Length: 351
Ligand code: SF4
Image 1 (cartoon, helix red, strand yellow):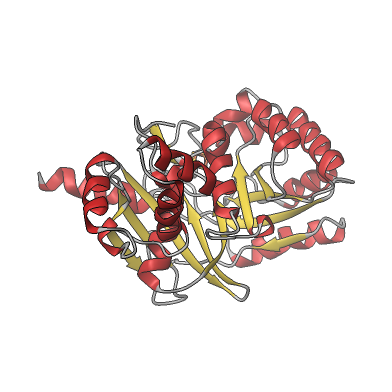
Image 2 (image 1 turned 180 degrees about the horizontal axis):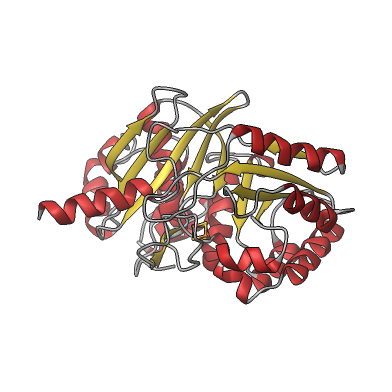
């Protein structure tokens, strides 16, 4: 936890009651504040109308809420995807995305400010890692969007800026609080955590994670190609990663999603598809093909639809379950980290 004084947003309901007692208040006051934040998504103590006015003022002094503030919004005119830029109380900027699917509204949240993983197709990592997000800062993204849009968020994916397993404990706590029955009460089935494949945290996750969907950013059929796209591949071989994935499936009986960003001329050939299918043979999994979003600073671009469909067909023929992710928000800064980066560059230019 990074904040010196824990925020209500970082606590479970029972911890909030304990925290209230530490502050010399009855435990139920902590539960009231907690419900205002985690169920009703209040943005200030002033909204907590069943708290005495003097207590609201005291709490504002002793435990300020420190919620993410909206710093910009981009709305897609094509598909309704909305990208949010939030500013945290220390000035850090993070991105979140709201997507609409048939099954409901999904929010993709950031788990870190920046990222140290260095994936070549990603704008989030271009300025490196700044800090981890607290559980409350992750929850704050979901709640702010629900509040702003007046919609129920039914699913979350931890797939925005940051590597979730590089901030393991805070991500786990975020999921736990999001699942609390008296709060957001989101089913674990509706949560997805996506990692580039940090091995030791993956082994730990296998033992202790709640039943959320695990997505692995694979993006290549072999180590040679993977190393050109993802520096993590220099530390973790595909064989070691896939062995850990097999252990995960054996232990949990849960299907893994493999994310595969298709980049033209890099990993999108028929031979690449055949090699991938061979690698994944017999593993309870599903491949999600994603034509890469162009990132101005990188030279990668997504292949034409024809090539995407040919890749898909090979996997289907080899009996590997596969989908092509619907491209969302193509008319806004689509790739992870782009909005944040553009905002920062523009701010620097204007100073
Ligand atoms: S893809 Fe994910 S892990 Fe890789 S640099 Fe971007 S945010 Fe980090």
